[in-house]
Picture 1 (cartoon, rainbow, N blue to C red):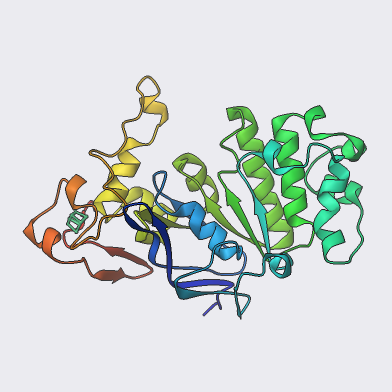
Picture 2: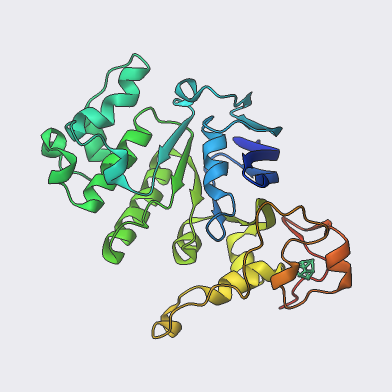
Length: 306
Ligand code: SF4
């Protein structure tokens, strides 16, 4: 059995807001093994980015535990830099506009008292080494994201979190960035926690997928099983609403119904108000976790497609 690189166990994050408490993470458990890519998918506000922030030590847990390379993560982001790198959605916002990009990629090394060559890092991410003296505004969106990836990898962390890394890029550039991530993983063996609502990129990149809904992981398993044979009705609705080549002429519809107020205290399944399969049992009882081989889901009346 492979040991886990990242283990998130029953993680809970609460935000106190006017009118109540929002549980952004409500008992989330996820694991990532060495060299694996795990994607976290779900609609906006489901808790994906809060999960990333918690793994980075930027968001304290109100309950549960996160361990990375066997050590518990506790609000010490700088100390974590050697174990986890981060690629944000908008490379322009994540690079200091007043710094030459060569300085930006070396920042993690400086902070940990090491030296390095920006040209070498640029080569590793497919950038012309002569670009080290440029400023972010002198690069294209794809080149800036390569710089951001180079910075995330500068310390060779075993885990890199990518939060919607291609969302701000043109379609043609997205493929290049995804191929770069795959190549990097092949050459240095790192793992990715890949956060996205773009299911096409998830299917291309991920080994496993965790589907989140309102602060919980409702289904988790190997990518192809999740895409071809979903068990949870929310997963099935997400896949149905995803754009595809066949549906190019139609705007994708979001899964039916409104997302409930996140301040709601749920009794029973939190997807019940939107679920086509909902029955009395779903409204009264929290669905149990069902494990089938190497996948799991929380649903009283799962979809059976094969
Ligand atoms: Fe739908 Fe019931 Fe399953 Fe919830 S538990 S997803 S309401 S079938």
